[in-house]
Image (tube, rainbow, N blue to C red; front, side, top):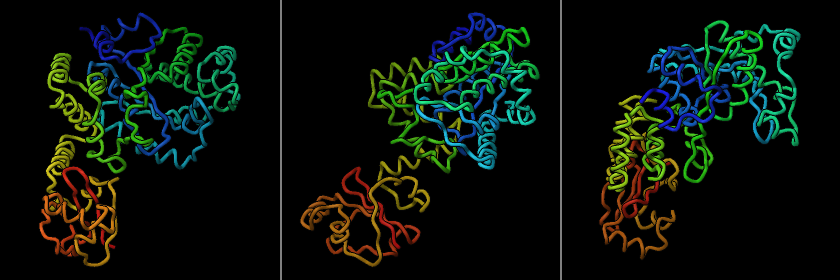
Length: 410
């Protein structure tokens, strides 16, 4: 299987600019680029799907150029529905540095990182119109899918011009770095082809592009979205444990396709996991491999092992040795309540909605179904005190095997 054939097998190729690209990828060592605008302080899991493809090309010997759009970020890529809010230059600069560090770490310093602001900042408006705008027909731009969809609701000239700015990026990288290929998500196809058109008309050269399909879950939502929130690559925004929980709960129907897209596991290993997933889905071996590979690549093996350990602790209920910070991570989103003074266990359970009555509380305690900080509560007279709280702050109540409640002292 050639590299291009493997990319197809993994479902990583959607649009291709030319059939010649297969030969380029399989038999030459070329420079290519992938870009993103610094609209947030961190990249998220949706970006990671594209970055893995770029990393796959780099591992095969192609030269990776990763562009962070300090210039295009000031304008904003047109969205299908409404115009993006303008982001300040200071915010763009701060976001840019955060993303640059993430990309550099993912590629272990082996990728060339560029900022399109460097070659755009001194480009005067008149020069841009003469040197770039003159080569692209308005009707050509109106046929771009994202622009066409916005015509009825309205699109500003700034957004309308975005495709020219990104097209100029491709032209600049071709001129200065012999970059012949742009690789992006499928929503960037129109911008890629604008760059190819500029290179052809201005330099008389052939450039190439391909897009990757949008990665979705079984319900058609973007991969990496959890209740409307992105899963970030910054571990301070999304902890490795949270990422682990998301990945380990991947649907059986989707996990093999995700292994193809997001991991560097061999074809043979993924095929083995596919068999395991069909014959023994209860083992969740494929999900475990997905979580291991993604978290290790993003955060390192130590962070993956820590996330795994936290997950095992939660499963066993033995939480007393966790730190306050780990508790905040593991029990983020569970029902919580506040404590001020010492309180009887029955009152604690009733007052905080963990049970509906003291009678139910007694029944649960009698059946060994209530634990506090991992220790079984066996007496109706048990008193909960600040001294029992982890780091003097938190108590964890577990009802049954899976229902957790986080109490905190004021």
